[in-house]
Image (cartoon, rainbow, N blue to C red; front, top):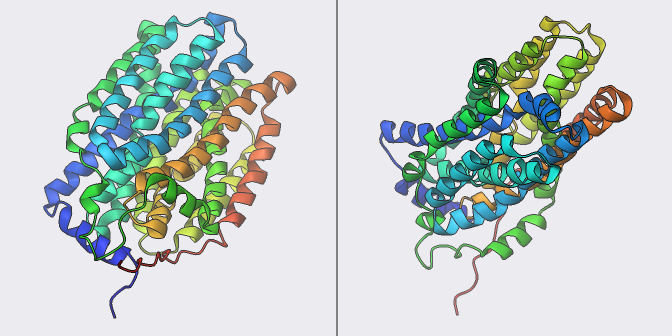
Length: 423
């Protein structure tokens, strides 16, 4: 008996519209993964400049952390809107503008000497651009352009691109700082982002290419109706709650792990290599998760990832703080760092299909970045108040346990939207 859900016809049409040749498949992944590598690599390396910015501006760790925290929030806020625009007018234009904004914000940051200036460059320009060229747009473009049977692997590999960017950019940033100073190093990183511009042409297109012929299935919902339908689904809300916790974890580590290392009396180079280690093992986690989402229930995989994070943080708190301990901890956290993205994106696509995928995944990313705002901001505030990051770690453990539990009630069955009767 044929599948009565609206996604049945849409999926077959999508399969007919995507590239069939192997080299086309890999070209799509190279383009999307390359954009994510450059934008994520630069953003996730900014924690290496936190101490230098503090020394240069004299603003205090709390004020500078606020700029980074606002960037986390703005990165999330831009994604639903960028996704809605990409769903309608095409991903290529959105990615092109986003890459330019990341480069501009990063290059201008060393010239800022006020909290407002840092918020504008780090939190509005660079973070907003990274949101426009971020995972909601890139994952939706990938799902639109590859066969449905290969979407799990494809999203895992694109996600691994972001991980590779972090792994590669952290050592590059350390080398540039040593050779040319922190300000020039940051501006060189901004210039490197421009290498992502050609990918905008390769990823052009929008979700109207997936629209089924009239009479075969309901017309795609408008943006407002799609968001209302999504928020009415309990499983979607639970997914967003878990992703909120993911944002807290990721932003705290990306912003404050070098500071954690320094507070333990270790060399700043250990902090840089720890960020690189997170990126390296994130590749392993992302690829493995892309493979796993086609074989196990995605909600169970998410629960496992969050539980693993909580256990890893607890062991790190109890262990002696040596370079080996830090790097092993970074490796474990790296495996789980962005491995939440493929199953989260997969569940959104499973619930609602690909037509409004960029926007609806963008809404979930907004929840992620609300958690990211708290992770980046509270890290600096707690350290200023107590001289330690311990209380942030305690909150981290509790949130990880909550996220593991909140994913278990999610129902993975595809949402069925009835076909309206013909007039």
